[in-house]
Image (cartoon, rainbow, N blue to C red; front, side, top):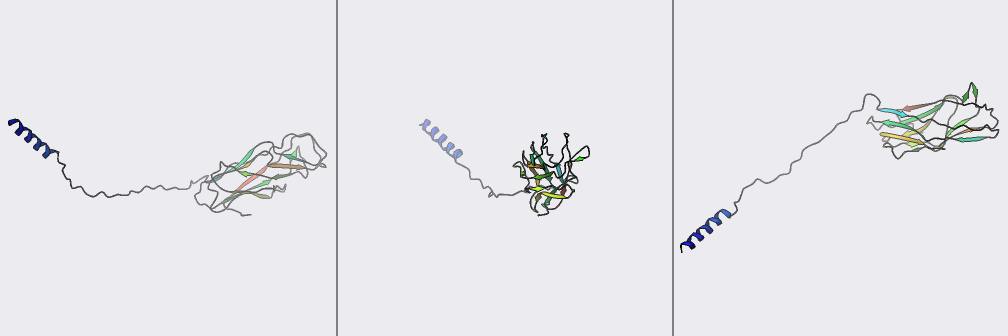
Amino acid sequence: MKTNKILVGIAAISMIFSTSMVVNAEEMVDQESKSDIGFTAPTEGALTLLNVADFDFGSNPISAKDEVYKSKTDTATTVQDIRGTEAGWTVQVAQNGQFKADKKELTNAQITLKTPTISDKSTGSATAKTDVVLNTDGSSATILDAEAGFGNGVTIESFGKDAAVLAVPGETVKVAKQYETTLTWTLLDQPTNS
């Protein structure tokens, strides 16, 4: 009997301590916080030409026929626009006179930028102009145009092999030397939409 009373007592004490206690917790409320970041345009180099294309038409045998020489190497013109304005921009190029070798001109030779493309590595968006003929009088031609709202980031205009050609008439006198000319690339801070 004594054993039963002890067991009943232990069971009663166990029940008292094992009952769950009700806690009055406050109701959970979701809270929001704020995260932000601001950007400012750099004071220098926000809109710039990172590099411009060089065209190599190779070394070719002298010919008395009309010839079209294709560019031999891949090249590119790269624009960086980190102004943060989405204002757009334009790239123009001008040929600074005719090809020359020791003051002898390659008369009536003409560069045409036939099929440039926008590289898929570009983060900016622009329109590459095709079949752009460069005049030897130094006048500028638009070759790349980013309309307002486009062109932010880096835009790469690729000139693959054959994208630029040099037409040389057969009647043009040629000497066995290296001919050269220069091109001036200009970046305007607004689109021309031409």
